[in-house]
Length: 441
Image (cartoon, rainbow, N blue to C red; front, side):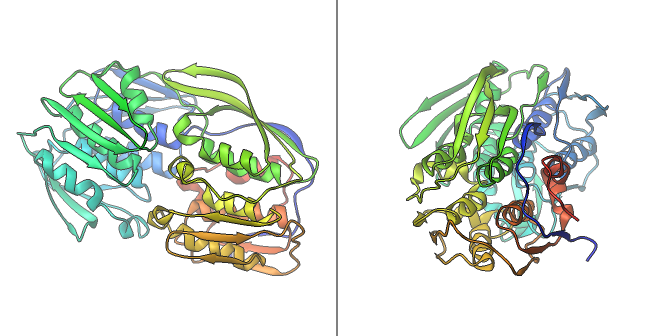
């Protein structure tokens, strides 16, 4: 049981300031884009989680020089189509769908065969969503019905494409954008609304990108074969990581928290607006523009009147990583909350919609879940006095961290497996939870 954490007490009241590790999505994108420059790029506050470390390992295998110190990471890129490596190279994306899907976009010119693999969880996830459009550029793939491991062999004659991305997947969109960088001519991507970190980085680097915003989708046009400038960057803090502390503070008694320098990109703010609608006392201050992104301090106070919600589907994409936490908030509401069109949740590291329902069942909250929706019957007076064991969740970091937050809010005697799961996205999570006063064994 050594990889379990045990929690037997609710968290006491706290009033603190907190800094959160760098944004994972931006950390991975920075490293991949820096590899395509012919210049030296530096980043501070880079998230050194397993997903980002695996990104750096993959780039090193592709011939990129990387230096990591206590304060920064330095990458000396080899330019577009500059990777150097041996034939039949094996790259391991670990647990990272972002790394696995985006790096394929950079490999469409690969003259030698490359095998991409991942861990047990990533190997269950769908890669056809990137294979099919990348084949249109001219690259060749072989796979296990669209699952890892995948073999790719690029082409010398990439051609620009027109493609409609219908799933609202920022990973698919970004993979195609990276492929377009290495393609002569103009690629056009019609994409359902999703996170837009890649677009903002492209614009900041003054790459030839044009984004036409429509109501339900964006049209992105990219002209390829342009030199990538150096990208010196302080990675803003990750709102997906901050969300655990937002919910913990909101549902704890007589508590207040300020989280500094959080990335408040509008395409990531779904959790902020959903929680506001549910009565969570959260506000933004010290708002700044930073290299295309917006950052701010978030101030959260205990919220005693949590309201049920019929969640607007327009927030689904921008809150996709935070719904497990939002379900915990719904458990505290007086009334019935309803969330729909969430089938994409089951395409994550674990079937998260199913796990959201399981956790609610374990703590005694009635809910009705389908393949794409969940109805939650909240109980603001819920108290737990029993033993709860959370295990067999495919080592999904968000299941683990949500369970920790739930235990500190509701009480009970919890044993939560696979504490190493946090290394995927937030290695300092337990350290920061303890800083707020939680007793975790």
